[in-house]
Image (cartoon, rainbow, N blue to C red; front, side):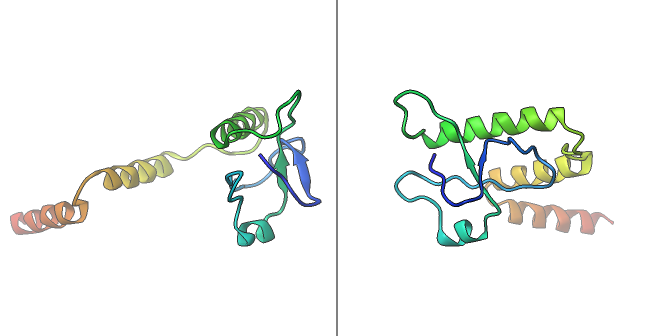
Length: 115
């Protein structure tokens, strides 16, 4: 994982205090200028030995594991509500069903005709 800028933070050394977004870029492409310019800071994963960079999925796994560990140790209210969980599940379900809009429309029409 590459990092740049003066706002470099060793993985969550400052803790998590508010909602955050994490963007990961490939070694070749990196991140867009928009993302880099809008970022509040940059994370660095300490590397030892001969390692110069990490695979994207490895970087994401390290960051997310560190994040979960810090969140569980904090007093930040980070868990989703039951309503948020249901919304995400419904959105995921809709995205996995082919022709979902037509199915929902047909269902609604059939229910309206029954009333």
